Length: 67
Ligand code: SF4
Image: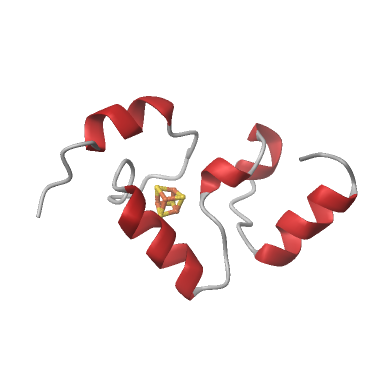
């Protein structure tokens, strides 16, 4: 099923990884949740570029005041 919001979502998506789920947020969240991760949009640009989307990385950045 096509996502009616895909193009609109892609315009605000900060993910730099080449991925077929870009703009299909339900698939993106589901994929990363299954891996104990968060989607790119939870991370600031510098952290997003590392592709470390783990919850541990998110908590570390939060504790460092970077989020
Ligand atoms: S955050 Fe992950 S699933 Fe979502 S578009 Fe980027 S690489 Fe793909």
